Image (cartoon, rainbow, N blue to C red; front, side):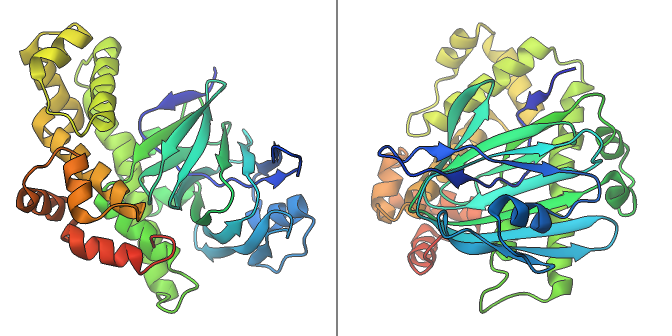
Length: 355
């Protein structure tokens, strides 16, 4: 069977060599995840660089920075990248069928990356760790990063043995025994963002202890597995038709892309060809929040993206996502991110790459 692409997520690691021509076109390169492999060793081969047991430098033709590996019990590994690219960076990561390895990956940057899906490049607006990739063995993912962007990446690799040692949730264990390869793409909820940013700080002045790092990795792993398998299983087992589920995700996408607009239930229902009461009921069933709750969430997520870009102040961001009362905007932002937008912007401006 072919690789499935779901709206939920798993993360992965991507790296690329580039060729300097007039248009600065990226040159395709590959990383293969093999059973028992170490990504640092694989990257050193790809980069033609000598590595230590836990780090490899980027080639100077690509930019500056390095990727570091941290290793924990039960096949659990964390790979951290911190670099500045001087050319576009494109990479296909191939997770071989017999690797038995799962990958979770996220990035922190101030611009966009592109993910190749169904043969077409799609822009994903990161502006911080807003998306997470989670994929299985037997699958592959292709990602392109822009040049002149400071960038941090985290990648977690693990096996089913890693999870069975710490979790006994049946839906999770079943999900880690897939019939066919999968790749999930999911938003990073606030709890996940906090963990991603904590891990991205490793190597800085406020580096957490290895025990704290281990706990953060386990918590991010737990959260990703729960969102990918347990929540998904809730609506799969509820008798929800695939066609209806696809309509719910189409509505979700529309709300995210039009966060500045006022939600109109009648128009949404007509657009997807569904009754209003059925649409609102199914949306709550799938996403565990009402349409209005999700619309407010979409507004503050977009506002956070605008603040992360460093191009807008708090009032501008609030107005751009549809708020006319800045007190209401600040209250909604703080409800979701546990910090008011003014303090959040100060934090962003004080950090070169939104970490």
